[in-house]
Image (cartoon, rainbow, N blue to C red; front, top):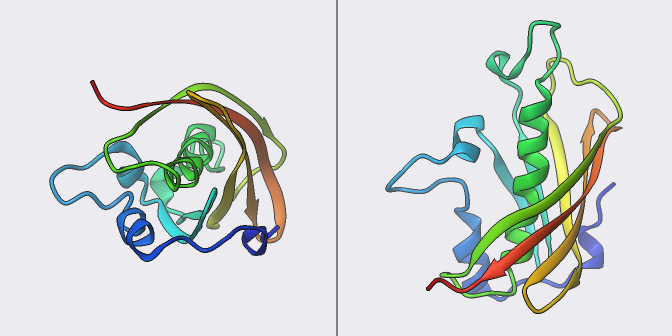
Length: 148
């Protein structure tokens, strides 16, 4: 699954800015509640981990689909943001996900990458793996805008 070799390294300043994504000092946001961790960043690419926690499970004993969807929705944000300044805002317009396999008591690693950039929209793909099995795939479209 590892696609990182297809993407260019980020300049140091951009890498520094995005390497702390998910660990905001002034406030806790939803991705941080799940414990999402960035593993690798490149231009238009990100790999992120959802570490297993029992509280991520639903009553059937598998990781909740909402936790997996959050991983997919979040992994593309640094990939998108690698081309913009620090004040740019990103909003999900569409997210089409396919759940392919269940996750039981294991970490999930997702890769997200940009497939096309428009003037105000960015098109992305993402895949999530658990123990060398594809468990989710999807396409996402984001709106991108400068703050007002």
